[in-house]
Length: 53
Image (cartoon, rainbow, N blue to C red):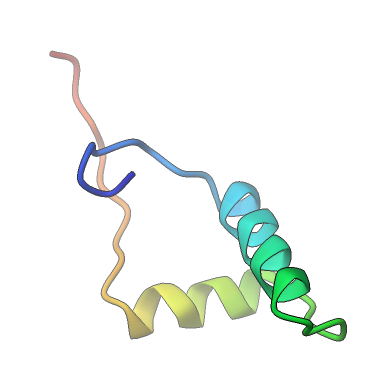
């Protein structure tokens, strides 16, 4: 999705993280806004305003 510049919302990112965690057997993972902010900072993910084309 990053290669295609598809915007991703916070709740969508957390939901996908919960799905991955469950698939990997991490039943106690709780995706939160705080977790998401740290994840984005760690991986250099920034929000950008997309103007009309």
